[in-house]
Length: 428
Length: 183
Image 1 (cartoon, rainbow over the protein chains, first blue to last red):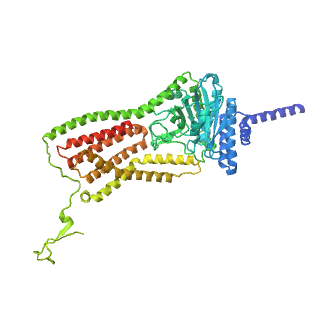
Image 2 (image 1 turned 60 degrees about the horizontal axis):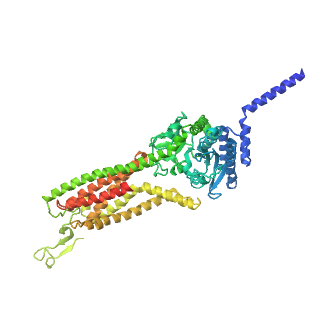
């Protein structure tokens, strides 16, 4: 009997331990991954998206609070964590970090690739990983979109029509420095199994930035409706197209759209300025004054805890974006839509925004010229019998002499004190 | 007030010139601010981001640059209007100093009107690409018509007015073609 009791007790304890392990299974994985990253070791466990965001936030927080001597290693831990997870997600060794600028002043873009044989074309999927504070919404969730898209596309490699380049950009918060550096200097030497990528071969650039906080999840392509936008929107009910031409605008056309909007300043911009069609995903609201992101954005309050509390369904946003990107790229019509997107971009921006206004002015000038000729003829006819007096009209009055001089009344004036004749003096 | 100013050319000239520079600054502040911002960023990049240029420096740079260009234009506009246009057209009845002042005045009106219309760009981008071309064209057309009407009444009779109209029209169409259509 005692034997049975002991066995039963042991079984019960084992069951309790197993249940306990299942209920808190995330915790050991999370701590394991973070430790590996901070120790500079390769993580061995492919995290789920929630854990990925949580650990990235924790590493960001550590980097933000690190003192000067520890900052570099803390940032390195962030990079190693991301690269390690990317390697596990893709199952290849393409993920690498690429330095730009000087070591302690510049930054590192993180790059990975799925190479498809028989094509030179590629799509770029990007998100910035640099953060202010924990940077949960801006932009750990964006990197999670990249991570989740990687996992999805790695599982669908046979359906991919072109190469896929994943880039986690650095220094976005410093003015898109990382993405500009990437487009200008690093894309042409993109590694992976290729020897480099020509900007002309980039079909579309997808970008995810701050996709969690806010009432709506937006897609922004061009300033007019495009086939690319339609295709992406058809893949997810959660996405809405950005309301164009609304709200306070920026002071300059920094982003090459032919008009200025504050919201466009993220990492798709350098690609867009190089003539690549882009699709940018972001969340927020639009009011009378324009785009309103989360109040936590770019503050120390942008923490994982606040994200979970304010937006419990933040993972739905991540999956909506990554799912839409994945389904778009693997859609059978994607190549034709993407090839046409560049043409539509030129039509929208060059033709509609640049040429048409000038042509309208030219047309009005021609009509005005006709009226001017008619009016000139009328003036000529009027001149035949018109008044030929010299015009002496002036804007400014000529002052009267009395306003300038004072005249004495001469010697005949009995009240005069002197006998000088005809004198005048300047008035003071 | 107007009557007093009409009795004092020198004061009017000074006031119009000051108004010209201020109106130009109001008209072009967006461009100068952005140019200064980009220039400072470039400078910062050249220096390896070791120097962070503050917003105050950007604003001050934009302010001084626009003021400087405005002051140069203020001096150049009357010179072109009288030294080139009036001289080459051989309009000997025109009082040149007065004509130059009127040219500055109508340029000031142009800058003020365009500056106000440009404020729309801050609140909606929808008119930026089209408005950026159409607004200056419409305002400049209005200003040229106004300038022509005032000056033709003041200095030209029925016989000489067609020549003046023809010359003003040619100058306007050439400028509009170059600045609004070709550039």
